[in-house]
Length: 264
Length: 248
Image 1: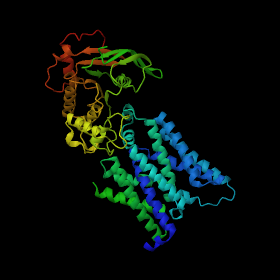
Image 2: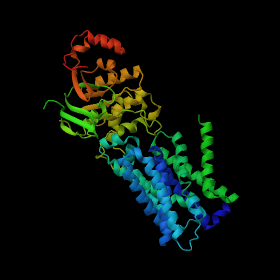
Image 3: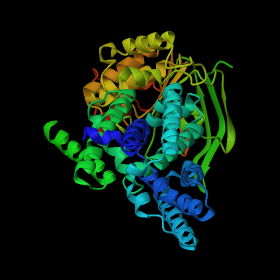
Image 4: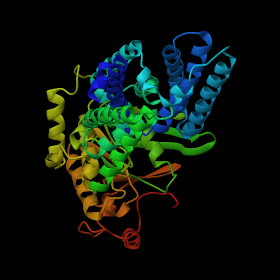
């Protein structure tokens, strides 16, 4: 196993896994306590539209997916802030529309032969150095914003109406949260794929919630758990030559089940 | 004006269904006002209008206090029970959003929040996760949060729903204590408990009917006991007149 670290692709894979775990732990905690998991899932799947457009236009996929998912996040934020009751329909529509756009553009791309599966299930072994820098930048931005605006994020997550009464710009921070979730989701697509990205956002955080009396502690523990799952999952995928995304998620689920059995 | 709040000819409607119709209400600085009435009668809407969460369709609400000097204890504090947040953090949320240090909370804010917790008798629970407190304890934490704004008036929406009788009494006793310096406005179903504490009652059902409780309380003999509605009606009936001229 150790000798595997000689290879640059393995170093990159490990680094990408750790960096994305930090982002997923922090943003995943906010997603869980705001109960917008389904919403993050919608953004993840609709980002496939951006991937399709990027492939068609010949621009970097990560860039295309990022722009597309930010637009999706802002649209969802505006629509759901005005009408909370229709949130599930709106997400369902965005989810399907994004994927449909992606499929159409990929169809229209002449001679397209990029492995579609790598976007659906991730290809952590093939993370280029540029993506690592993107993830690093994302971590820096997330940690800075969440540290600086911790009290605002806490207030809007716990009690939006009260936060509004105390003069907090609820709409702004809610939109910011969705945009950060979109960025995290896009970055995590390389690691676990867009199908499994929600698991990476929710399982470590769900586990961390059991041990946390504070949101900050939950964020820290989630990042830690996610990192652990990623490293173990990655090792198993290397040793047994199985899909890395799936193996990371199964390690996480297994840990959750074991914890749930022994805790209560 | 001598009143804290003066509501004049206030109407509110959602689409075409009228919720409040030509409501008038004055709230004095030292009042302990109970707002009662049937479900859907407009109690919560009236509260939201006073808070500024909704705007009146017609009529005006004049207030003499600063917008931030209003304490609010929302309904349904049992929601989000798994949320990882300590009692102290909930109280800290009560500080005004605009003024803040670069990171986290200032020393003054923390000491003020701890003082608020002390006031409501919850100082020992500052690090307890909010979901691990009992309903009555949690409600007192939310009152402490409202106290953080140094309010002149505190509005509570069904503060004792889903709390046992012991907890209810504690909450109302606490509010009575706070009423020495703060105006209290409580929306509640629980008329019999309120009668021991409230000074005035506003019955809201599209229209608003105002009662002063001065002469009613004398006829209700109870030692913090929970009267059933039948006993209550009997006690009120013996007073012959309630001082108002509306039809129930």
